[in-house]
Image 1 (tube, protein in one colour):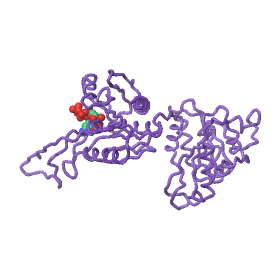
Image 2: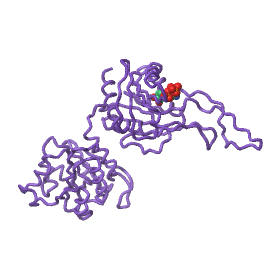
Image 3: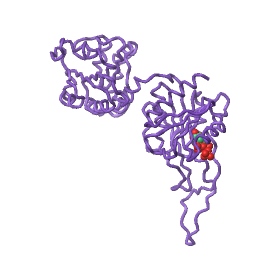
Image 4: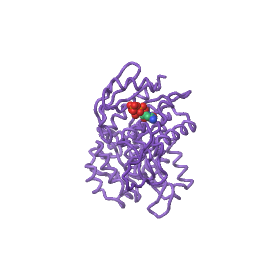
Length: 401
Ligand code: CTP
């Protein structure tokens, strides 16, 4: 319930993307938010207030002269106990209205009358030519300068059949952006590099050696670091997960490729923090076959030889001007003893131990943080909540260096 206790005024303006806001409303509710929907007259042509009321569980307002608010001033009352206003979809015309302080319908009046501290987030949705039009761009610059936050837009296929910039972000991306808007920006502007997932070491073109890492913990940390304001690059082994919103993902397969990708990222841009979450294979198959291995009539099993892979974390930690390095350890026994020893061996300021090695693929985890002073426990919670706590720790500790 990452939006528990938050009241969000959700404004809809005219656009085909209104149909996606039904899903966003459900998602906001599931995340614990109290959603107050306000619609322009145009928006009601695309989705009905009845639908939005059913999904939000609250009366929907469309009219400045709506008498259901006691003092008959919905443009004032609806925002006074709100935590944010989100306009999605936000049309070209509504951006114009925001830029000029127009007050000619309930939603625009409500925006002008909002308390100065109340965040206003907009998710533009329009045709590519409308987005690129110099008048729209002028208005966009103006509302940015006025402190209004833009969520997107994205580029891609459009309902009109054209392709380009102007697509509204998807509902789950909007949800992530809204959640992020409430997070402390403890890593603002910092560059964070993360490895995640398993590696896959080929035996032949169709077989390989891998492990059960799902990537969930590393992806959750990448998401939490982005929410904390960082510029995040995620070097990921093969996983079934989508790239976290806002995070740049570099896909790799083998440990050597992961090592090369990490070094390339470090060369491309100085990184402030490196978090090695990946379950990297310690060995690769030295005599991997370029062709598929075939069964023999004699029933001989293939003889695999292994060679050691580079230790990515230890190599990065040993570099001159190394970023603040955080390691992970999945141990099957003696975590406290092995975790402390592993931190020293890899020579990193912080090592995070998973309590129990049955964490792979699970949504929950329990972590132990090892540093030079000893260890502390982050009690069992879902991986998102733990990632958020861990990122707060990393932000604090890396800023003290
Ligand atoms: N790691 C790495 N490169 C490797 C092996 C591990 O970057 N080739 C990183 C992991 O991402 C993790 C930490 O080192 O952050 C510890 O990984 P782990 O597999 O627990 O440790 P190993 O060094 O492989 O030690 P062992 O398997 O012997 O316990």
